[in-house]
Image 1 (cartoon, rainbow, N blue to C red):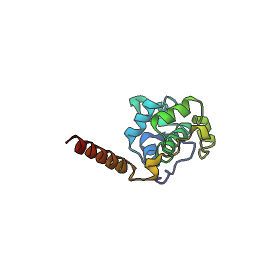
Image 2: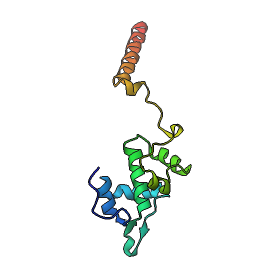
Image 3: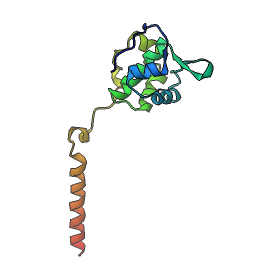
Length: 136
């Protein structure tokens, strides 16, 4: 993660500052605002966004869940809708892992064996070739 700005933890951040802190483009933050109703920065004249400390903590949590923990947008939406890891909770405990029932499922055989889809395709191809030989 890029270095934090020199501002106090309690200072409001602009979209550019938060984007730099998270290492994501500004349009990603604007997209998250459309997908996560809990993420609502203040908007001043000219539609300039100012993220409160609780918004910053929530954006950091969303970034971590999406980028590092493998959640989808829908998965994070479900966590937030269930009241888990809301803005105030994220600010209080940003490094607390999600409960076991909210974590992504264990990886399937394709994640354990990177050749899994190819092996399956080869088996299908050979069975099709055998079927064609029998027909001829």
